[in-house]
Amino acid sequence: MGSRDLGLIGSAARLEHLIRNRGDYSHVHVHARAGHLVVKTQDSQGAQAIVARATPIGAGVYDLSFRTHTGRWEPMPISGVMEQIVEGLLDLLGPYLDRTNLR
Image (cartoon, rainbow, N blue to C red; front, side, top):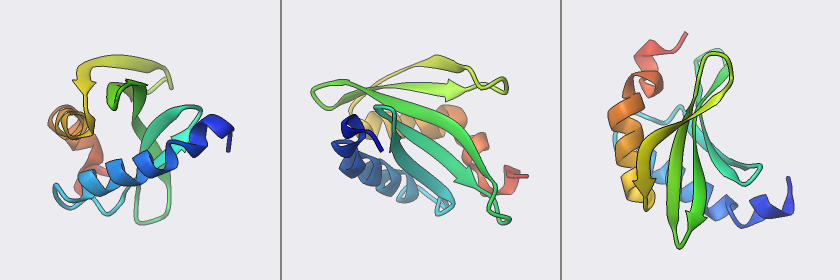
């Protein structure tokens, strides 16, 4: 883990907690990686899929991006504090996080 990720560990735990408090999302995990908060799902077989990432842009504000099927990161029209990121994540990418849609 890089030194820039050390400061994000607490933020990753907080984002994971906020997501899990919004519904049946115990299978969603958030990790600090390469200066981002990476949101992953894990199916019942243990396979993980990266869905999105929140990138800190300063003063507790983040930008949200999603990962395409090709592995490319695409920005989303969501920026804000962590609660706004969670709301946008669940509103726009909810089906990708829903346990029933995991393969």
